[in-house]
Image (cartoon, rainbow, N blue to C red; front, top):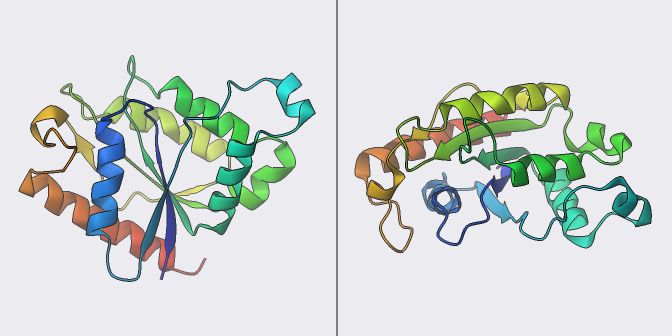
Length: 184
């Protein structure tokens, strides 16, 4: 069964997107593993830092990504686009360029997101597409999960309590897991 790396594009304690990843773990089909990777310790990308050696937190996530059948991105939407910390993480993961083929080429990717606003992260999810195309990934378009008014669907402990959204997430994760399990 598939192994999926989940990454939240938010560093905030109590992040709706990190909570969404944890709910995805809970609702994943039997045999599917979703590991949550952290970008919290990634420094800002700097070629001088890279020349001195790839930082340890980046190496950890590179290993996680290499071992995964798929990448599940839980993205907030900041100023109608992707969060800078998430883009920074991708910039680090794609360095050196020789790592791109083994980490990203044909890697199955799904995007979901939650926001306290009304747009349901639609613009952020769309902004990810050129980045994923540049890296040569294989995005999954079999489902969409865009949560608006996130404060109303998660409780104060970050548990996804809206049953309609839980069912949407369950179907989303099942579909992505099946996509990751397919041979290419």
